[in-house]
Image (cartoon, rainbow, N blue to C red; front, side, top):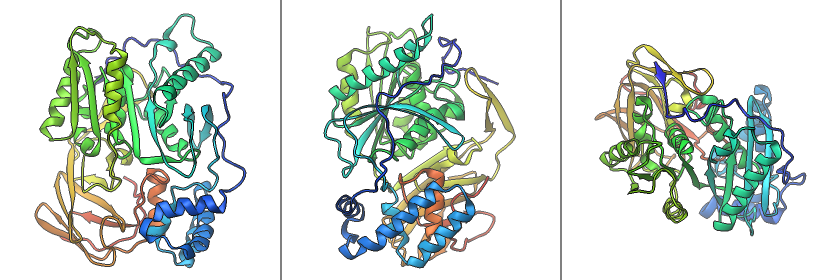
Length: 479
């Protein structure tokens, strides 16, 4: 089966550059001063902060840095043993895990990153606004740049690309001086998905930038126009945990495997624009998605104009941007909805819900995409999970076509000192105390990304048995 996401306008080879950095975005060579760390701990722990916690937390924090820097299982196991021996509540460690001991105190300006993190190339430009202070988390706006600079003949030089990105980001910082702006480098072979390598070109910079800048995980926004609008839909549908709001302008997600993932936007505010007379990308693409989101009763705003064509004017773009920025995401929402027919574990995760196995997946199907590495594998069938925190340590879940799943928990969601009851499709499937675990918390952060969320306990549900015993296994179970 061939999958076309209205991308025929891009017909050039991949462009890869080694660019001179406008500014170097590197970790500090000195750890955060004590007074800075105290301020960050106070904010992270809230009413659980006590001055006497500083010394043990600071010592544990050094071990956390070593844990995330290590790729050796043996070293990580040893560090977990040392953290366990300190007898610090794993939930406190989870709250400070987002803080980097080597965040630099950055000057305002445009920075360029070209690194390899594990197997992934991480290439992006990022703008730091005036007044940035590493003691205060700041919003992050990911703007997927237009493709026109990449499809000229002759192709642009590295200097021209650097100048273009730098100019775009400077203009953005001038217009919106209250947020960090990130623009990932476009690879015209991969775009930003729907291939997994393509999506990684946007998601890996998102993961990486938090190691250099104090980003507020509640205020992450994604915006794109035209082809980048299609990528905006694709990224949010596959990685719904990260975004407070998205703003696709004149784009769409026409493939069936994309549309069935729309329930994943349960906690993502969606701001959409399209023009009725757009001859480049049909407005029906946006209309259909908005209609479905409204059927789900999700928070979506749609603006359709007439006679503007494919390119929105500046005042409309600003109006859409301001709507998008009104949303702050609940890191541990009361309701999570998840739907998928893809086999990859990452694409079967939303917030505190992880699907592991379908009852009846059906045969594999291969979708050949027009641009991007390899094919997309999907199952013939799909599943859905609708999970709600119902209060009194009760979780109510409705599922379709699910055999096994995991619910990830922490002290902000339930009282971990009391038994947790999980009711699925009207039957109690789990009842018992879930034990907080440093190993569980750290394993899930390796999977989900350091610091975006913390979960210290899990409830595993397997429908092949009537009930499931409490467990503290790591949250990286293979499919």
